[in-house]
Image (cartoon, rainbow, N blue to C red; front, side, top):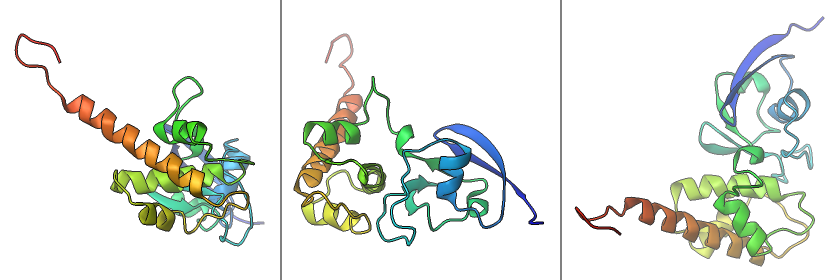
Length: 173
């Protein structure tokens, strides 16, 4: 009989608990235990990046992390980016710039890009392509994906600039 471990993670802002076998992968915890199926399983060899999520603020391939290693971590999946009514700028960029085709790799790409844009809100095309190095899309030549990321970065920059504008005393912006 395999010993089970208690795991507690904060996923998309909500604390979740599960009893898991020590060899269970984070991707299976997210999909099978927590029903967060936006995180895809593509290759089972950590090559494709379809399973990319944010763990403690860094993009990781969830097929390479054991669930017990994530105990106490903060996880963000594609479901935690935005909602249908309030798309995250990355999601909006993909929608508006046609950054997806079949959509299978898209959640992993969005999460990898999320990691990039947390560190760099003005990435060059080369930096975007470098950030996408571990995520394979078999449908595109990445050009629309790059344009989607550029738009998302611009939207986030503009949003941050607008929130920093303070009206003059007695006036309006």
